[in-house]
Image 1 (cartoon, rainbow, N blue to C red):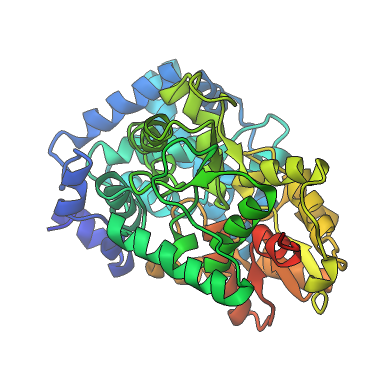
Image 2 (spheres, one colour; image 1 turned 120 degrees about the vertical axis):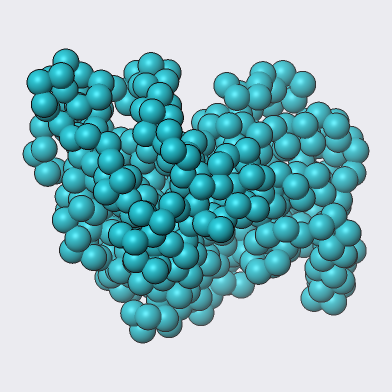
Length: 462
């Protein structure tokens, strides 16, 4: 049983139907598993609530002049050529309904009725937006399509329309504590396995602590760092060891990534609460997020308002591992040998949620310049606040969207080629999963590594 009524199935592609969350997933987040008969008033009610709660949403509905300045800035439009993937056109799918149902002009026929055809377009195109917010940088009015996308996804979820990828990840995070569904015992065993690997490599007893009460730092990494990006997890361990900082991970909150950001504020708050509770229970002084883009955006932008204040911490806000690394570097606590990273020319990919939405722009670069001899930037109009999305953000990293993901990654692949670099570094687990697939498609042979990977390689262990 899927989220779609038969009428919607008939008008949707097989790909679209296969992407929708089924009854077991939707029930796990307290939402209906099928489109209810009163779906239209439910969606309009939710939209009305969001327009009142988030006044910026109403402003963005009213101020767009359709100038098209955003069109050439969207990686999905550039990759697909689909005019509805222009941010202005995507937002117009909501704006027309807004005009009909929430403005005076609607009483005289302005805008468009919300019907099943419109709902199908919403599901199609608002799940072809990675919420990267690049369009907002170039919009003369600062209209943020990510906020519009988020509102539509939240309204659709009320009536049982969401992607199985996003909801499945949320379900695992709520039930187990991480997006990959790694149980506590498996997390602990994996940490011990990596400790053995470090010992074999370095001869030193460098620990990856689990559930250690009273440590200075609770590190909340993406769970991919214990499963796929193990060099990054090893990098954290070497860094803390060399810096003399006590730390721990938590089996209750072993995941920094928060897919509630891609569905609704209810789930965003619920998942965010786990690592706040873990920090309190373990009596740590600092809450530090690992190398994950949307983990950082969700933590630094929403933690205090959703689950704060964090007045029980010595530093009453979440920190990023690269902020901490920069501080330690400036204090002269690390001895580095940059020649350990010779043999590659490194460039840096700014993850959307780290740079544009999270404000960490110079810190990663400071770490890389301290750790490598050969660093260069990609073209200036593709980095820092103007960075291109990897193509897999916003809850889009699913097999069903592979064609879209590959096309959306082309601007970033082209920028990497233009840099002349032979290695790409980025502090985001989603980017690390997406870009290798895209690079293979575009015939780019280059490793994609974390910033902490390169720093750890340069550290001369005491």
